[in-house]
Length: 273
Image (cartoon, rainbow, N blue to C red; front, side, top):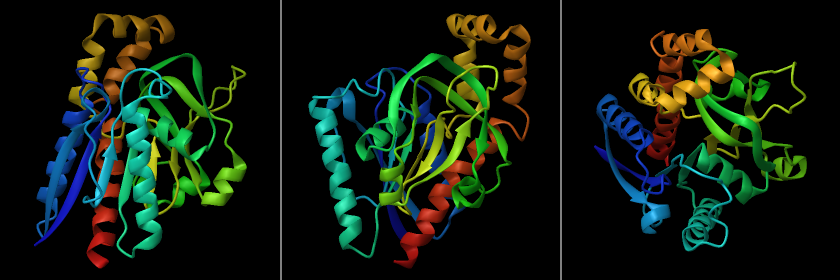
């Protein structure tokens, strides 16, 4: 049995959240589903405790988190976070056995800043709930999203967004946009990027692929969050979102697909290296 090591970088800044529990559940399920692999993982609270993993891990998962993706500018934690990305990037250029990184939501926005892939700006209004996401032509061919339809549902919580792709940076890196937010022809806003693959080793999603029904019920139970959805979309939309928590092709499918695909594909590559 071969050990695969995973570092989870917790960017929730000490705030109560469901994301870390969901990531842990997926790691445990992956460990159980792959009997020839022993998955060993550790969590690091980076923003509030300045904990960061070293280069000893095979896989890094960087979580969502509260606040602006610009909050860390000038901070010790962000400087060390970027230093870790520098080290992983250099390692991958100099070694046959690669290290793999997945970025979620807040981390996705920081990833875009790091690689200068686009503009990270505040949204016109906050997105909260279960939202449709659309695959691009690249997304339809990417194994990360294999099993999802051209339009799928995802947990989407963001006051910020990634727009205006930097075509030069995309071309230099060979990066691809895998998903875009829902089409809104009635408003004059650019569709935000919802998933990007930098290369074989680095990728991420603006949405929360780890979210499950329990975590979403936790969010929807909060009175201020219910009020937000009802005021913005109407009461019927609120109950439609609740229904999408239970249907098999709603967020259940997204949760069973994206991070599990990333881990399965990554572990297979690591076993071959």
